[in-house]
Length: 239
Image (cartoon, rainbow, N blue to C red; front, top):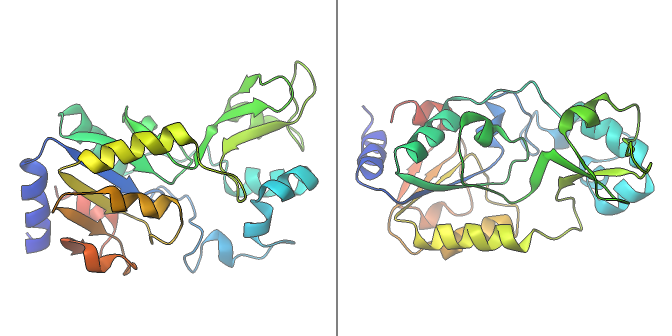
């Protein structure tokens, strides 16, 4: 076994206070496209750049175009949890993992069985009428023709995902900060650590077992105690 994997395994085996902080790379192995890789959403051709489409202003002004993109590229309900999701759920069940902090909106951590999940950017599984606040599941959104409308009042439905120009949920941030600041081992996986304010949350970690698992280098490699440049699913399947 690779010595880096061996060290990670030792840290995991010896801890009952692990927190995992993950990004798009955790979900790409479930065939969900990320935003910044060569074949990610930001490198595909649309009438507008994805950064524009996924903004609050665009959602309000051009909901038809927003939902055409959203349903096609983000509402991927057939995706299944992969080895990383399953291992994290297993570690939580064993009492070793205290929380998952994720930038993803696909709900795959919960689908794998994780209970304590802080979704920094919301979830496609929660949708609310902007007029009467009635809740709708993702299947309703996927089946809607064009812009999803409330079946009670006719108001436009908005996914509970954090768009550009919108702030993060304060309660979620506080939960994530609390978990990270008290962690013994912090494992960061599948994220380039360039999206703020989410990436800044790792600054609350006070321990000395900071693990970075990512295929490429990140701006925070210098503060890590252990760096593994490989796929998150491959690494987790070995521990």
